[in-house]
Length: 307
Image (cartoon, rainbow, N blue to C red; front, side):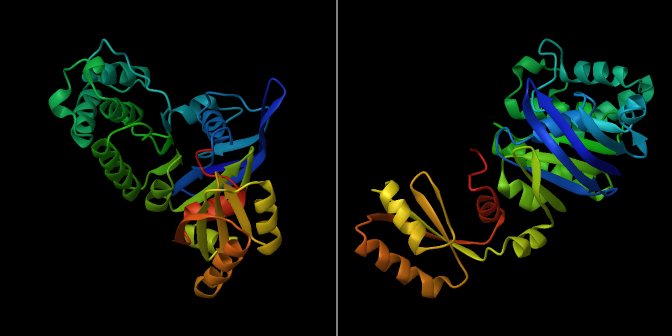
């Protein structure tokens, strides 16, 4: 359904994308995961024709992005990171406005609007102005606006940022239903648990490059990370960190928390504690983490997702 080949983009001399390539199958739920500034939004913006790439090739549903933007716009829906609604209009007025831009016939638009308001739990608030809505309710209407013309592909750029748990769970249920019905979804997120729950495959992007890609099981296998011993120190300095690097070959440090990657925690934990005590390092907390997307990401990038 989507093929991206050697996509590049720069801003004022700063490289945003360094020639990324990936493919997404028809009906696949693909997650794009990365820290701030990694290139997630740039990628989504190019695929949805909001930005123009410097070079590379993109085809969506058989249409070439560079030569047939209008063909692509007919088959994609876009849920942007920023809310794109008119605050002085009601929910139903907003949806009818956006549906008109998609040239959805009036009768079909009326039926589709009511269907989506029901799906997203806002039928009882359809006549209220958007300015009276919570952040989560606005996000839901934003999603409804992207679905009015029944797109084949849905791009969602961090759709659950800053919203209440009720709205987040409802959005999960909606996108899972869309996926079950065969829609291709490209989803960027800051939240590991979202990617683990929703995505068939995940691309990890960092500094404008795809550094790993696959199913969760494939990423676990390829990362060679089994378990993590995360130790928080109250007195970690450069000398002590250098000492740990000399003692343990596979570790990462973030904000005084050192993650030791281990294939045998029961054997390795006593060794690590003994070394730290002998080196005068004060341990304030120890946490054993099973291998998950967070530990894989930290191992690959050396940073937390929200860095």
